[in-house]
Image (cartoon, rainbow, N blue to C red):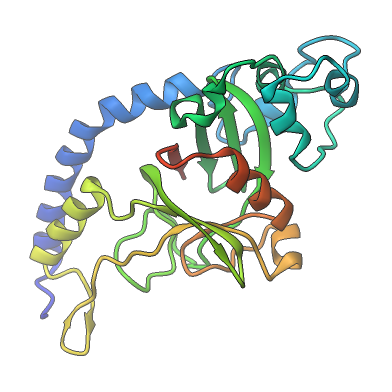
Length: 252
């Protein structure tokens, strides 16, 4: 498709801005429900430095408390290096009902610039994991197939399956409605690049998975084609605790 110049692109982007602003309200409210205890910091530093929920308590000592369904789940996860359990971990330890099986009990907020994936249980920080993203040299949300960017926005876990390469793959509902509107505006403005004489598609198959590039993950080097990659111990945890339908918010 022939490119129509900056005026057309500007018009499309302006129209898209209205759409995004209109959609920002619900997304902002949902995010606020997860980002407790100063976790809205784009660097996630507040999460890493939260004071102990119970002074002098360690996760090992907490796990020695009477067994509950929640404690059995926590026992099955990888051990963490934090000196004290998070508020979310203590809440899970005390959980005696099957509520932890429901997607509404969990949430994920991802900060691309800080290379972190934060898991919340019952609205409180549970654990923070390192993460890496698409290897595009350009910042911003994913725009079309093959741009090597990781999406930004509000998504859900729609499917989970084992993977020979990634250990586990937690699929997200990309493209969502906002992504589709953005793509339609850009395509109408002639801004979507050609592929074999046709506009490139929106793309898909975006999710959270493990890694076969351990050193890249360790050094926080973005290497994927657009997915979110975490360490293999982390993806084992995420596959265990996050049900289908879990909210995943991806921020710049």
